[in-house]
Length: 130
Figure 1: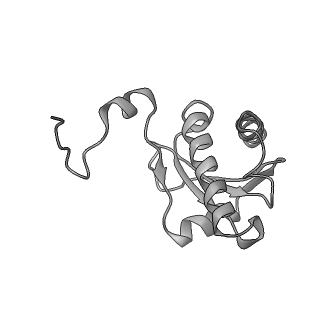
Figure 2: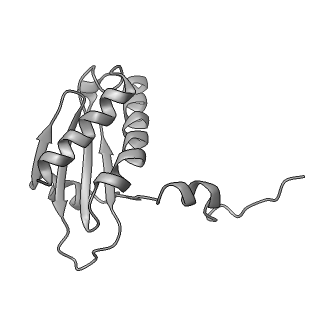
């Protein structure tokens, strides 16, 4: 029999390997990021901004895919892939105190190889943080 975890309890095994990223949910955070630094690659468009709220801990990330990306199935697939790429890349290459928004690209984000998406995000981060 397995132990039942409360719905808000963190998964200890997952959190030990990768620090949990905070997810942007407020529209004003997305808009603020869209007016800050931008860097485009083949598979991902990255928007990044340094938060000025004095909170230098943690990396916040948001994901968006417009209807240009495709139908709901394609948009959801693209966002799932963006979430996984961010989970793997941002803890190592992102900077604490920054907000990042990953924007899916039309017909590319959902079909590009996963390793290419990862290298695109790393390249974009290096250009944003020279």
